[in-house]
Image 1 (cartoon, rainbow, N blue to C red):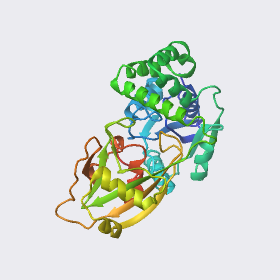
Image 2 (image 1 turned 180 degrees about the vertical axis):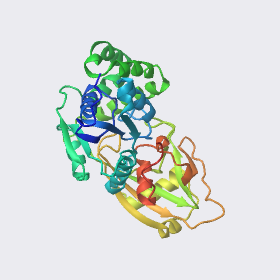
Image 3 (image 1 turned 45 degrees about the horizontal axis):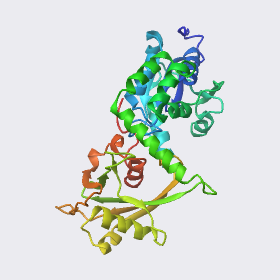
Image 4 (image 1 turned 60 degrees about the horizontal axis):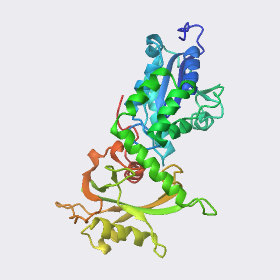
Length: 362
């Protein structure tokens, strides 16, 4: 248990720790316990909140919140403020503003003086990157706990049910607090876990198919952001990965195809959008390459996205169902939910339409 610091002995009014916590492990806890020792209040910003489940982000914000809380005593939890943070993958300024606002609203001064705020992180972690974005806050570095990696933990858990059980029985105590282990065991009984294991098997097959390539492959895809009368055109995926999630219409380009032609082909063949090609071309309002390194489960996958703003009409263009294909529909912009969108498609829409980063939550 971490003793509550005396206000006069505390170095900081508030320390901020940013992470994804997929899952929270003993290395994260070491940073938070040091923050509790040095500050009156600790703000833990949980990144990648409200994103669809994936092998990289298997646990929702609420699940990670319960995992984190389970690792601390009541008095410690009273000084911990855990806040969700939605990524803004293609606009650092939007993301930084959201972090600044959340910290400002929580750490507002109780007295006339300004609070002393610091950013805490593990050595060789992401803290050095974050420090460049928040020069107004002091830096606190905590020694890295060697041998613990969230990605390696996820790899053991989602390789197979037997691999997960072996890890939880033999090695998890060295990496994870007991409360997190207990919650992961419960998660293994859910249907969601089986779907993620299926996706891991598909990913392994995908990688094996390219194992003999002389260089790691880089894939090129296209996506269409088609908006009309406050609605965006989406398709619901019918197969893994991302089965049941909404996605932007698109796909891989053909070897002898230009990017725009590939995008128009996808709208014509996969969605059967009843809009003449000339009208679509005349409605083009933006084009951009989306290249976040972790954006796709396939590996390095670049997406060229085209933004079409169709003229408002009383009736939305018809969509003809494609036999055996994904199901397309017009979704009101107000109903967009990052947790139901595939890969980085919410952030692609966000970038073109200027949607806010602070999607919801406290």
